[in-house]
Image (tube, rainbow, N blue to C red):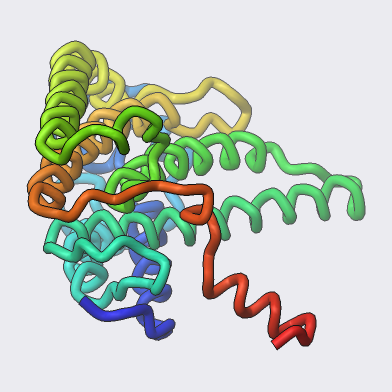
Length: 276
């Protein structure tokens, strides 16, 4: 468990992961068509959105070399990201393998925020300076915001920073706090199970037919967000169980208003205004 060192690799790997995932998602119709998907409509859609139509096909009838490399690099970059991620001073100190995965997904989410802001700034510049707004920036912003919202929930669970009400919890004895923690974890797991059980069929259908948004840009928001909801909620449930196990023997914590104060940030502010 090491504090944050701010090394470039900790941010370059999430950026590379986002690029490979974006390429794979945009070219996913090639895999669906070759691995069991059917329909002239999907083939026509892929012909319109294929970023590199001139590349030679290396697998099946549609998958080119960049598609295959993106598919291979995603797990490679995920493993590399888990190995290189470091804990920042303000982050929670649990640091098992799955905790590191959640923190890496958190780093990817942080970089997605940068991408989202860049898209919005690009649209503002085009629309109000060049008077030439785009057809894709609004839907792209919605798409990115959906992934950010979902993935940030997993990071919040790993950091124990989700909304919790401690008014009664703090006055309970430690054994009764453990009972409350167990009940809340069971409820999270049950919610994840029934959501997955009830939503798997619809998510599979949306993904299988590569359902599109229906706008001029027409991104595959329904085909990608619905499966991501199920995956992230399942990860949140697993993380909740890991939190329960990791915190089982932890000393009781009394929460106060001072918990919201970042001492490092306060020290930097004092130094900036010359009070130190």
